[in-house]
Amino acid sequence: NAGVTQTPKFRVLKTGQSMTLLCAQDMNHEYMYWYRQDPGMGLRLIHYSVGEGTTAKGEVPDGYNVSRLKKQNFLLGLESAAPSQTSVYFCASSYSIVRGTGGTGELFFGEGSRLTVL
Amino acid sequence: KNEVEQSPQNLTAQEGEFITINCSYSVGISALHWLQQHPGGGIVSLFMLSSGKKKHGRLIATINIQEKHSSLHITASHPRDSAVYICAVSSWNRDDKIIFGKGTRLHILP
Image (cartoon, rainbow over all chains, first blue to last red; front, side):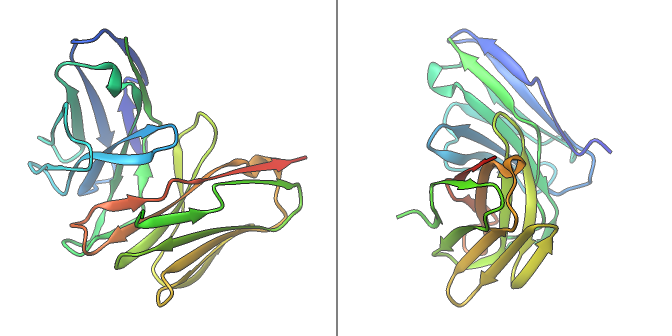
């Protein structure tokens, strides 16, 4: 049982390059999230999904796109990377206790992906 | 004002001391989470609670829904407890999104 797996764990990009981060969970969770963590800022929500085929914007969605074509996978894309996107990215998943009431279950996080944009 | 506030932001203590980290929130919640992040490491869920008190080993988490306040206690602290502790809430009036505090950095000296 792998839990939540993120790939890649480290990546260096040049400004303007594109890349995709993959998050995979094997717990059949409905909810999946992408966060970025920057010094002094805490975790900030980029995009999230409450089920297969659905995505929604979080606090800081600009410059990112996401897709949830399969329930177990949540992809985060950077179309044209910028230095401001240098960060550590965390994926998380949870089951839904009662959908629509904020009733998320226990959170499971991936190990993080450190992205540097030069 | 942040919707989830933690105190203190930083805490240094001697091994063996009793540690308390506080979390206050201003939104309606269905659950509160305590998370742990070791330096350079991933994030692990310690507790999820919606009422009362939970205990895992030397860790105790309490919540007072009426006062919108939660505490995380560590008994007989140890240097391996050194980490950032994050409070987060699942808010029923935030469309299923989770709101995070900025974390409390704990350093336990041997």
